Amino acid sequence: MASVSTYLNFERETEAAFEFYRQVFRSEYAGPVMRMGDGPGCEGQPPLPAGDRRLVMHVALPILGGHLLMGTDCPESMGRRLVRGDNVYINLQPDTRAETERLFHALAEGGTVESPLQDMFWGDYWGCLTDRFGTRWMFNCAAKA
Image 1 (cartoon, helix red, strand yellow):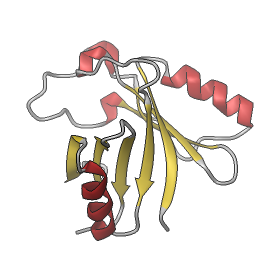
Image 2: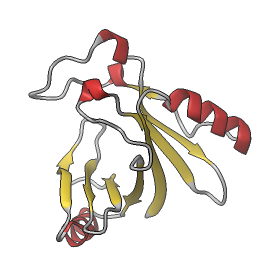
Image 3: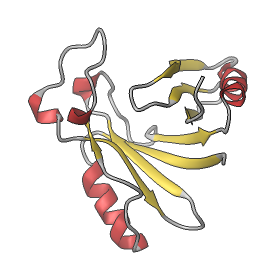
């Protein structure tokens, strides 16, 4: 079933932020907290510094009305300088790859593609962009090719 969630990026505070949100919303994580060291290295990128392997790659927390609050760490060692205020994505999870591609290309028109849609190591079809109005969008489709 298609869904929408909010994705938050932190430089190195995801774990602390989500522990705070878990207590505030009296909720439990929707699955295990994935760490940067749990995934394969990124092609063409230097190896992950040892101190970054425990950073959060992905966490999901149900908050209100079935809405998921998700998050990740984005340290400068991974090539992104995070500025508070630009750390939020609207995460779309369409049911089909065709709908994912339609939405992605429509929202990308006049905007900037950060990561093109591609099959990822966790098994989903993923990409992200900033639209022409500065809104950040992330796409994650579980449907297989």
